[in-house]
Image (tube, rainbow, N blue to C red; front, top):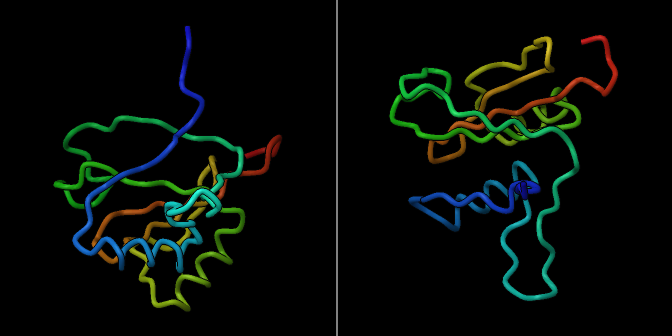
Length: 126
């Protein structure tokens, strides 16, 4: 069976497309969509990706009207948290440890939930 090889894009509605795109670039380092052939595109590092439907009534995303949540892998969650706090980003959930890594929750300027995930190193005892 042929299968997909990864996520090729994530598209969503925004009240202020330009401002939100700039926030993702400035706060999370995500390169914006190329406008010309020679413009760089955001390249992800190879690593685990979780694809999981949640129950319709989950409170995990926060607002029950929220139909999706992004989860971004980060190398150093503590450093990312310090960087985002310095930029004025509020954490809805402080960085925390779990058996599958460290997590933190933030929201973009339009209230969309974003989970940040520092996965344990490969082969670690976690």
